Length: 80
Image (cartoon, rainbow, N blue to C red):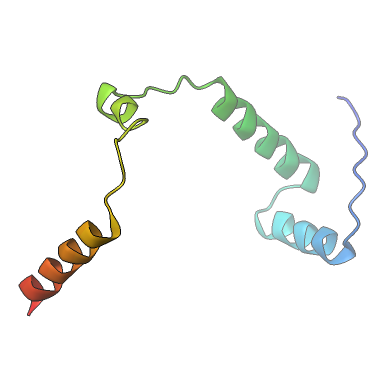
């Protein structure tokens, strides 16, 4: 076991964390250790980005204000 000292400025946060850990029937140390494990697991995960999603990096030019107005007007009309 390795000890870790945390400095938290807001006393209410510490009290809340202690109550939360107690409600979860665990210690604050275990709660923080579980959180760090979850962060580590997330960091280790390989992220898959589909070709479709990659293609959105350069989606093209933005519509002009006039094009946006026409689009929004046609949507308003279709909802009536």
